[in-house]
Length: 282
Image (cartoon, rainbow, N blue to C red; front, side, top):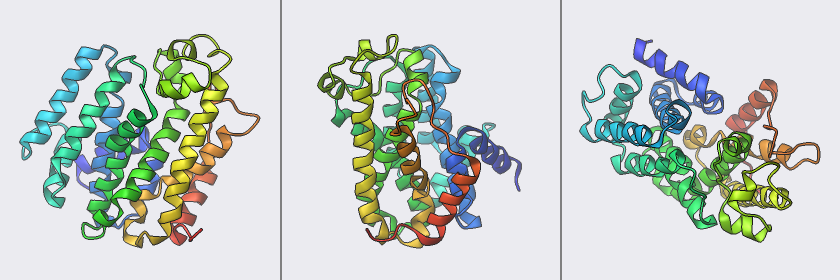
């Protein structure tokens, strides 16, 4: 395996275990491209964790814009940038999708509240959903466009589940991804939600967020039986979303303070089952 490919694969394994495991079910000749997409996503999603000031974070996002716009040898010496540009060129991936993803990631750098459910769904669409669609284009560029709407539902379900898993981290640093309109309906506000125990409306707001993630997941599962086997690896992380949501929805777990976890054995089993059987018609 080329050195850059191994570095990129190892980066995904360390930063995004669920997508790493999912990519292993893709054909061997497509895995490197998927790892390059997932490593890029991990890089830009983790900017705030590595760069704690917003302005340097925006500079880093701009660096990625410049690298992707230039293509070719741009980003030479950076294994993720090199492999990503090679993937974009080889599979003719739309650079606009990456530009939109980077634009959406600006929100991560600040503590501004998520204004509304519509804004949250837009954020999910430009991040997780776009990543699923790009992975699908790598796997089967002919079939992928037919499932763009399904990728949108899948991305919303996956991203909202991920945001719920990150609730304790986000609250510690004063971030609120639960939309302000959902908080208001629950009798809370972004300021109250991130302070102390979250206030009396916090649990109702989290329950509403879990319900919204379930809504998108159910919509995805309604259409997932039609997914061709070739595209399945792009959607495989959704095999874990319902298990995470069910655990967060349980009476013995509070997403406000605890991170829901699945054992390695259960994750492998859920992925293996969906990789082999797909999502049967409901």
